[in-house]
Image (cartoon, rainbow, N blue to C red; front, top):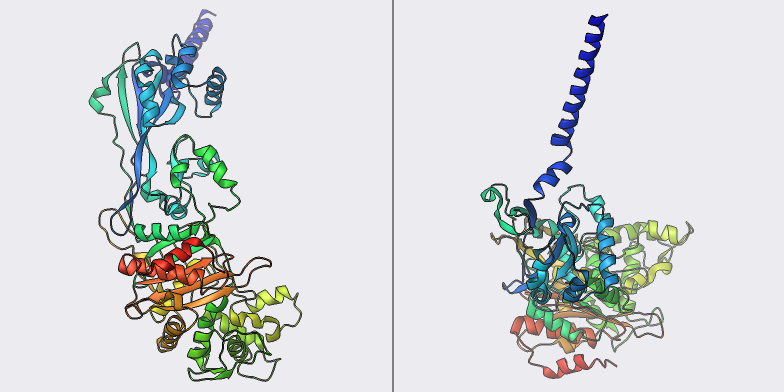
Length: 603
C-alpha cells in the first residue's frame, strides 16, 4: 500500500517538474516577451536607415539627392510623468491631436509597449531644431534620424516618380519580407522601377541606457550592430538642361516632348505637360499635397509620353511608304495623281512621286498606296482580299515598335493600337469588312493609336536607317559606369535599309521646302514630318511633329505632341526645332520662334 503511494508521489513530482521545464523553455526560448522586459530596461534598439541611391543626368549633374529628416519614436513602458500640456506646446499640436496620435499608434499591428514605435514622422531640420532641447523632458521619447528625397530642380517629375511610406497593402504583398512598416519605397517612375537598386539595406544599433533612460554608449562595443548599406547611384541619359528648357516651352500647354539619342536609345528628355513640383511629394505635407495634385483636372500625374494614346496623323505616312516599298507595290518613282474626289487633301501639288507625296503629305497618294497593299495589288478591285493584305501590313508596322510596349524602364507604358483582322472581326461582329471600311488607316487616322515614346522611337529608326535600341532612361548603375546590357541590342524593322533613304530625303524636303519650314536651322540639316491629328469638335486638332538631326550621324530624334494646338507646322514643329537647337548648339539663335512658342497663340 505504502509502495503504491510512493510511486504516485514520484509520478506527481516528475509531471510537475516537466511542466516547469516546459514553461521555462517557452519563457527563455520561444516567448521573447520576457527577454524584451529584461533587455528593454537597459538596451535600446535603433534602426539605421540606409541612404537611398542618388540620381544623376548624363553630364553627372545631380538631379535627386537625400535630405535629413527625423522620426519621433516612443517606448511606452519608459514614459514617466508625462507632461501632456508641455508636449503639446513644444510640438505645436492640440490635445485632441495628441490623443488621436496615441490611439493610432496603439492600433498598429506592430505596436509593442516594449519596442520603439513611430509617434510622429518626417520632422524637418527646422522642426527638429525647435524640439531637440526639450526632448529630455519627455522620458521614453527618442529621435530616429533618416533621410527624405530632395530634387535639384522641379523638372522631370513624371519620369523620376516619388517616394512615400509603404502602404499596408504593399507590405502584406511583400513576399521578400524586406520591408517594415514605416519604410519608404518608390511609388512611380524611376524610383519605382529601380527600387531594388536604390533602396539599400537597413542596419541596426544597440544602445545602453541607465534607469532614467539616458543613453550610456554602445552595447558590448557594437558587437551586435550592423551597418546600413547605401543604395546604388543611377546615371541617366537625361540632359537636365534640355529637360528644363522643354518644360519651359510646354508651360501652359498639354502634351509631351520625347527626345532620344538614336545611337544608344538613351532618352535625352521626357517632358509631360502639365507636370508638378516633385518637392511637394516629400516631407510631412506629402498626403495633403498628393490629394491636391491628384484632383487637379489637368492630370499632372498622368505621364503623357508613355500613357497618352493618340492617332498618329500624317507622320504615319512614312511608315506606310516604307511598308509599300518593302511589299513592292510601289517604287520611289511611282507617281499617283492627287485625286481629291477620293479623299480631301491640302496644298498645291498634283502628280507627285513618293518623296514628293511624303513632303506634301498627299492624302490621295497614300489612300491609293494602302489599297494596293491591302488588296495585294488589285488596284481596281474594291473587294480584294483585304484580310491577307492587312496581316502582312500589321507585321511591318509592328516591326517599327507600334502596337506594343517598347520596354522602357518606367512603369505604366501603353501599347497603342495597330488594328488586326481579328480587331475588325470584333468591331464588325464577324460581318464582312473590306478596304473601304478601313481606308483612314492610310493617313494615320481611324483606329490607329500611338504613344509619344513610339513616335520618337520611330524618328530614331529613320535616323538609324532601319533599327532602334530600346528607349531607356538609366544608362548605368553604380560606380562602374557600364551601359546596361539589356539596352545594347539592336531591334531591326522588316524593311530593307536601302529604302530609308527615301524617307530621309523626303523629311529633309519637308523642313527645307514644305510644311516644316519653322524647324529649319542654319548650318544643321533637320529632317522632319508634320502631322495634324483629328480631334473631337469643337476642340482644335493636335499639333504633331517628329524629326532628327543632323541628317548624317544624327545626335537627336524627337517627337512633340501639343494637344488642341492645330497644325503640326506651328506649335509642334517650332518646339521640336528649339529643342534640337538647344541640344546641338547650347542655345537658340531664333528668339522670335521661342517668343512665339511661349506666347502660345498658334492660330
